[in-house]
Image (cartoon, rainbow over all chains, first blue to last red; front, side, top):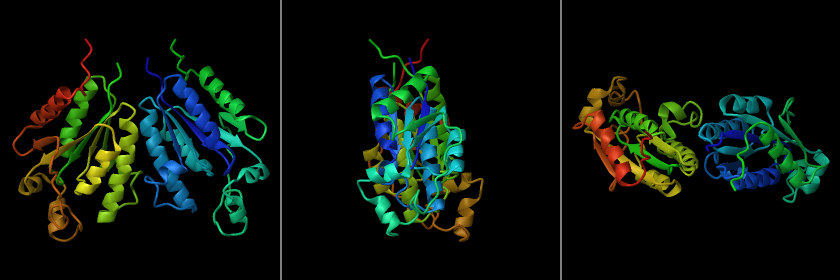
Length: 180
Length: 180
C-alpha cells in the first residue's frame, strides 16, 4: 500500500525545539514504513541555499527553494518534515499552496525559554549586535493564525509533542498502519 | 512492488533534443506505473533557480540545486529526468556522486543541426552577440567521456531514441513490468 505524501511544516522561534520534535516524528514515521525526508537549515544551507543570508529577501528565497523540494517530494508519496524558523506568514502560506497535504506545526515557546536552551549562544550574540536579523530579537516572527497543530514545547515533553503530531496524522488518514 | 529510483540525466547542446526525448521517455515510464519527475530550465528557473544567469558560476549553482532535488527524489523511488545543457563535466560528475542510480544520457547532435532546429532564434542572437555565454557559441560544452547512453538525435527518430533509453533501463533492472 502506497501512503499519501504530506508536508509537516515546523515553524517557530530559534531554539523552540522544532528540529528535536521533527526528528522524533521522523523516526516514528519510519517505524510505520514510510518514506521520510527531514529538511532544515543544516541540511539545505550546505548546498541548496548556501548563497543565502538572513535578510527578509534571503529568508524568502530560502523558504521558496525548500518549498520547491517539498512540493516535488510530497506529490511523490514522501512524508516531508521541514523545520525552519520561517517567520513570515506569506512564505508559509505559499508553501501551503504549492505542496501536497500541507500541515502547519507551530512550535510555541516563550522567548525566555528559547534563550535558556540556546547552547550555541546565538540569542546572546544577537542581543550584543554580533548577529544581525535574528528572529525574536531584531527580526519579527509572525505567529501562524490557524496552524493545524500547536506544540507547546515549554509545557510538553518531546515524546508528548511527537505523539500529538502522530495522533493528528492518524485522525486525518495520513498514517500507514504498522505491518505485523 | 516499489521500483528503484534513478536519475536519467540528459545533457547536450541547446536545441539538441534533450527535452523532446526526455518527455517521451517520461510518458513511457508513467505507462509502467512509475513515479516520474521531469526537471528542466523552464521548470526550475521560475522558482528554484530564478536568481541565476548563465555565467559559469551561475550554471554551476543551477546544476547544484537541481542535483539536490534529484538526490532527494531518486532516493525515494522516483524516476528523475533532468534535461539541462549542463556543459561542465565536473558538475555532472558531482550529480553522479550525489544521486541514486545516476545514468548519463548524452544527446549528441551537430551544432549545425541544433542551429537549424532553433525555433526561438537563440543561436542567431548568440552569434550576433545579443545573448552572451551561449553554449556552443561563446561558452564551452564538455562532452561526456563515458556516458551510459548516447542519443544521436540527428540520426534517430525521437521514438528510436526513447526506445534506446527504455532498453537500457530494462537491461539494467530499472524498468517496472507493465501490470496486466
